[in-house]
Length: 402
Image (cartoon, rainbow, N blue to C red):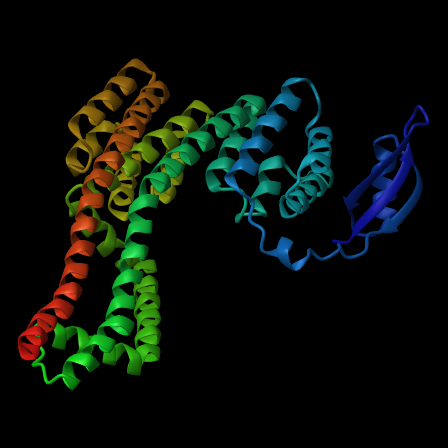
């Protein structure tokens, strides 16, 4: 439907401006008249100005959504209407792309849509978790509480991701620097020494021959290596994006030492935090489990949750299918069972999530402690091998000179 910009006056004569969708001008005038507005002008809105090249690729960050939820919750708790709150936020949001999204949500609500349905039109910005929780908040009249829970949930998730990324910075830098040094020595420096050795009539030892052959292959076929690398990476990415590939990857990921345990803890923490937040917000348990199944982040755990959902639909409790799956630790299952029996499932799930968030933090530190010396040994061994490929023939050349 076309979008119109209207000007009108209310019963007290106060001028009002707004934007609303309607079939035509007459339909909009009738709608505004039915709510007590005297229309003075209606103009069809032109196409929105296009975002700049940079703004077009700007992402809506987690921080933007957290701030949006907190500010909107405070405004609604203060007694402001949803439309007034959204209109105020459009003037405060700095992210141009997010501002456009909020404006579109505002127009959809003004045209008669619900808040959750309006958010659902932007699936790349608002997650199913957020949409379902806000729908529950609309139905129960606790939208401000739900928005606060969403903000807390997003903060926990963002904090966990930042801790993991921060712990991996040093190992990644170490790998990049080490790889760069190794490639420079093997491609540019070693061949120069090899020319000297060959001219001196020195027989090249095996390490020197290996490095020299490697450097010649890289120099001649560097473009083939780069293209092949990208092709293999793209092929693996495509395969692991398929249902079968995702299942294989997640299956073997959970079996890896240290990394597998970390992946399992992350999945359990996300399961507990998401399910606890949803149930505390009033979302029905079957809907909650369906959402958790999609966002848990591991196909093996996701299939377990699917079986849990099927069991709950038949009258079973959550803890029993989890126990049968053998994918969840006994202490987690016990805490969930206690929560079900005592009627405080959401509180117990939050405690489980807090416990595993802390456990993930320790596991990340442990993994980093293991990775750093391992990378140092690997890089040191490679550099040592390169140095040996230089010094071994150099000793031989000294004998020849003598």
